[in-house]
Image: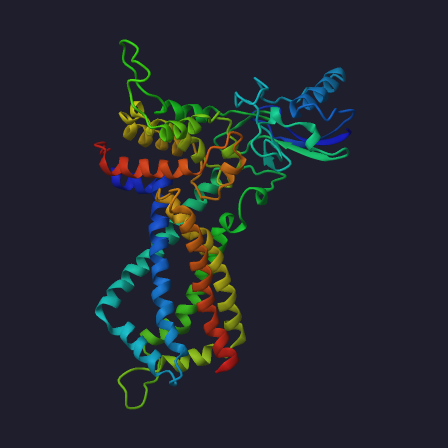
Length: 251
Length: 224
């Protein structure tokens, strides 16, 4: 396959970027999208040019490291895939493909297609955990959890924090990410202990980071590579409203 | 800020205000449309004039009028604040974006649709509310109420008004198709059993209400 790529190139955080066009030739349809970029980067290196910086790690669709806004959609045209699991057979010979970084005020571009997603880490640190004091390991089956709840919590826990929801959202809102992290713990007995402070602090951090509000367009869930559902945002809203109404934090 | 103002100036808090005021404004639409159906009564406007006299003088209605204005103001104010915040959340946009692949047009353009509705609302108040409330209407002979009906007949002989009213009702329908079910989601009211019904009901509600309103200018333009 021969393709034309239009790629966002940006030297560093401070400099301005621009779309640059690169032709790539001899791409196998069995390659992943990232492998196709590897081919381009080797060509660039051979010609003494700066390779295109992009995030990647496991290349198995698990880690959430790969990003890329491909042809106007996060992780490209296929539903439920990360970029590393997007294969070139979904494109046609002669296609022009645009590749851009995630765009959000909270995700500054480090270089080329690499954005700083640590805003999501800071939201997580604000409450996305369960405090465990020292002691013996409790028996796994000692805490009764209904199967439906366990399933829902597990579904929410599959969030890989890739940021596609933010990239897809017209408001660059991180509500789907936040809702997965909040509802996953709020549904389980271990997480209920800190439920109120968790949702209050995590939403406050979300807002401080400069993410937008939710317009319920559903773009996030449609583009989520692991299928986090909008029901989680409703759970988040419920958790937030009840926490604000009943918690003892008056500040 | 105390906890209360903090809550309602957060991203979720503002959406809660949007949803509560939005659903309240939906209830207003029902009342307004039901009352307006008196316009179709073939009695030379008597029923409509009695109805509008009641609406202008009943103390409960006059009190609810203030609540209604507050509902509009909060809805519009929060919409402006949220839109500004949401725009600021993505200062650099995409060169190539295909949002139509993952969301509906109306869900992405609630601000635009709302602005059309606001412009319509101002024109509409100027057409009917201002003359009715601030006494530019003629009285009906031998009756103690004013003739708002003749104002309606006059306004809807103007094709520009008729076009504006019909287009605005289309905008309102799209605003409600997204807004009605979205309000329940914002309030956290999402459930396997009820959400499919809320979505279908919201769609039917939006179409029926807006069709009802749009029929009024068309009826007067073509048949009266």
